[in-house]
Amino acid sequence: MENENKGVEFVIGKQKNIALIAHDNKKGDMIRWCADNFDILKGHFLYGTGTTARMISEHTGLPVRGFNSGPLGGDLQIGSRIVDNEIDIVIFFSDPLTAQPHDPDVKALLRIAQVYDIPIANTKATADFIITSTYMNTEYTHQLMNFKQNVEERASKLVTNI
Image 1 (tube, rainbow, N blue to C red):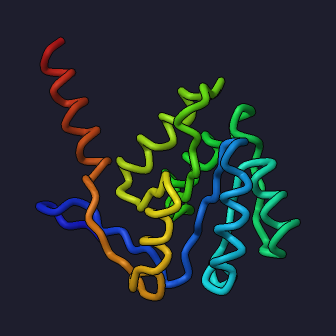
Image 2: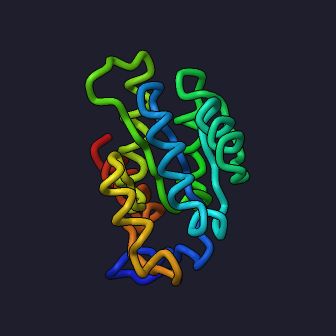
């Protein structure tokens, strides 16, 4: 639904699409977190990058649709699904103490999640707050910039400068 002054209204449905991502040193933490929150997570659609998705499924029994591993484009695949309104929440246990070869992809994923105003958890504590929020069981409506209008206005300004 579009509103000229407020932008575009997006609805995150009652059943969430949750991306689960973890750097190598955080995969154990992610598996434990998923096991601890099994009863909540089983009611939602789960997605993950490569090894993380496989390990969560193997150790918890939760079905997780896997994409490529992060360094092979998995972070970007999840980012594209955010743009297509197919991912509602990102739980990303990142390792702040280890350099990552795909750091630009990680930054792009986090940036696009911010642009589309979806909840992002980079720590277990934040993930705990998100998963226990009353919004996990209800629809959530939020307003985003009208991207189409924004592009048209920017293009119009560029044309007048030629």
